[in-house]
Each structure stands twice: as structure tokens, then as C-alpha cells.
Image 1 (cartoon, one colour):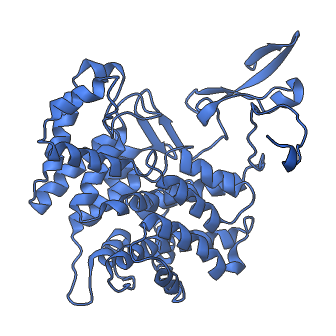
Image 2 (cartoon, one colour):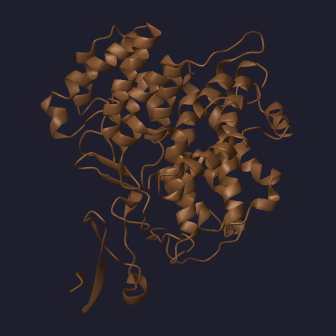
Image 3 (tube, one colour):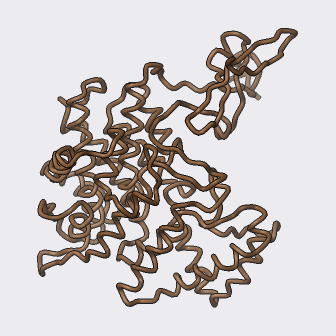
Length: 429
């Protein structure tokens, strides 16, 4: 017998069905709540609201589990690469060799931007934030490819998917080059996804550039770890915009803006700024741990805790090992990395942090790796957007194919003024 939840209101009783996910997680189906009871739910931040069913990503915050299409993140980080992981998220299965070759070919050969797009970069100030540039240019792609914007034509969607995956690294690299006054380079189709991006970021026409395979692999793993994370702020934004049957370019552009916020994609930047402040203050980690524990102190330890994970973020374990590999390769010991290790050692043994389940999250080490690879801090959220792009695409596609497709329209509880009359301006006090 199907489970139900009983709601009693105004002397009447209503039964709401319970839906169950693959791993036993349960939710109350309140889709008929307003129609049958006149009530809506009140849930600030949507922390107890499931906005959709999804077959893409599963995470268990209590156990520290993250699966892409059922495959553990640890296996993908070790054995896969970003383009293959993108295919998995978008299409639902790991590709055959022929499918992967086809997918990779089109991602590589769509990487060049229309020459007119370069004019957009000339119109920006000399030092724009790359997230603003990335979102604006991604949105502008809808003007260059107006004949392939259908949200129901599978072939047009496929072409748009290839273009987005291919062009975002070029768009990102160009925003960086613009900010430092260097020429905008063309992509190199002979290189892999991450190697090509590194070359566009750091090469100049004056001298040859060789891609460091360790740097390329480190970036590849970081992109995999960020590729999707269920219904977070930016993903929900992509879905909400897409629910108006808006094209994929515009939906992703909105997602990039949502990711820009310091509580989302800007969190790893906040970690670096925190570590720099501790370093400049003499590097006394114990002092800042005590400040973090003081309820009357405004200081917060950035990179610890997570809205969903109440255990160790599985991605942070992978990133910590990756950070060691990168620092060993470049033969440089960043004092911020040492501070990070000390902070983690103290916080993961201190009863205060253990009781509150404040474990290091994915942002704690990712910024340190980006910094070690030569990326400036403003590029950190752009790199996050590059990684999250396959998840946004997969979620947008899943929404468009949903048999229960509806435009997103949250309700509210109005708490403003009651009905009142208009007062002419000459009578207002």
C-alpha cells in the first residue's frame, strides 16, 4: 500500500502521497496542496522543498556520497576525464569509443569564436570581472546562432551543447587576456580540453608554450569534481529560466550570474582571502580557530561546512591529494597551503567543529590549486562555471524532456500593507 501523509486543516483531512527515490529518500507530493486546501508551503531557501525528480546526480550529505548517473565521484576522478564525464552527465551513460570520438571531435571543432565576438571584448572596460564577461558573451551567442535555439529540436540542442562546451573555455581565456592587455589567442585543436584552455590562458605569441601534463590533469579533475551537484542555486536558476522554454545559451548565462555570488561559486576566493589575512597577521592559526568558535566574533572559517554535506565532502578528500601533487610538481611551497593544512588538522580534531560537523569542503583546497597553476583569483568562479557547465546542460535537457514540464512559479506569503486607497500628491503628509 502506498504511503501517504495526512494533513488536517480547517476541520478537514487531506492525504498527500509520498514519493520515494532510488536510495530510499522520501518526499511529500504537495503538487495538489493549493488546489485542494488553499494552502501553500512556506520554506525560505527551499531547504525542505524538492523542485523536481532527477536521474542525474545523487548526493547523501550524511554519508558523504556523491554519484554522477550512479557512478561514484571517486571513480570518475581517478579513471575518467572531463569530456567523458560531461557526456555521461548529459546523455546518461558512459559513451562507447565511437560515441566519445564523435562527441570530442565536435567539442574540439566548435571552440573558435565568431570574429565579431571579439568586438564585444573591446567594448568592456580594461579590467572587467571575468564572470560578468563570461555571462554576457555566453548570452550573446544566442544572437550568433539564431537558427538553432529550439528547446524541443534534438539536433539543434545537440549543436548548442557542443558549442557551449567548446566555446566557454575560449570565452573565459579571452576575458583574462583582455584584462591584462594581451592578444586574444585562437584555440589549438591538437590539444585536449584542459591543455587547450591552459595554452589560451598562459601562452603569448612571443614564445612557444608547452602544456604541463600534471597541470592539465589537475584542472581536468577539478572540472570533474565541479561538474554537477544536484539542485544548487545556479542549477536551480538554469532550470527556472529554462522552464520558460528559454534557449540554452540564455539559461546558462543566468546560471553563471547565479554562480558568481560569494556564497556559491565565489567561496574558494573567500578561502584564499581568509588564508592571506591569517598569513599577514603572523600565521597564528590557533588564534583564528578560537575566533571562529567565538559566537560574538564576526570571523568565519571559510571552506568549512556545507549546506548539504553533514559529513566529509567526498570531493575535498580528492582535492587535498591533488593539491599535494601540484605543489610537489611546481617545487614551490605556498605558505597558504601550509596554513590550510594546519587549519584542517585543528578543525578536524576540535570537538567544536566535530559537533557542528564543520568539515573542509570542496572550496577549501580548490582555490589553492588554481593559484598554484597560475590562475588569478577573479578567474576562480569562471573555472567553477566551466566545470559546472555539463551539469547545467544535463539539468536543462532533463527539464525540457520532463513529461510534467511546467514553468517555474513559486508562491509567497504576502506580509505587506492591507488594502488602502490612493492619496493624491497634494493631500499626502
